[in-house]
Length: 91
Image 1 (cartoon, helix red, strand yellow):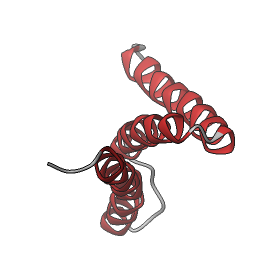
Image 2 (cartoon, rainbow, N blue to C red):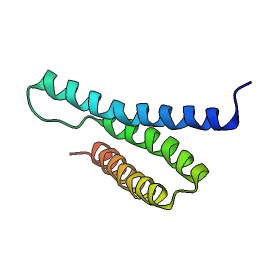
Image 3 (cartoon, rainbow, N blue to C red):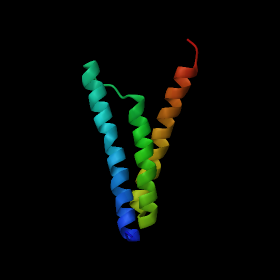
Image 4 (cartoon, one colour):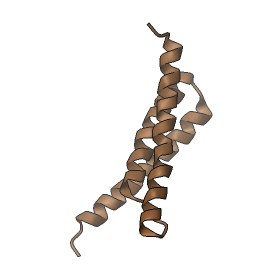
């Protein structure tokens, strides 16, 4: 059975991988459209990676990491809200 430290290390790496996927998604979407775009999936990967990394940061009791991920989550959530709101408004 893996140790608690090994499990949390895996959580940390999984969060970082999820967070890094947003760059791959953005790059591929931009290449496909031949212009710089930020697809909705970018923000979902940001939230997923941010939540996982925030959990890891809280486990580590790292205030710098906690603050950084917490602020980021607010921004990612706000962007998703703005996207949702603009697609729900008729016009």
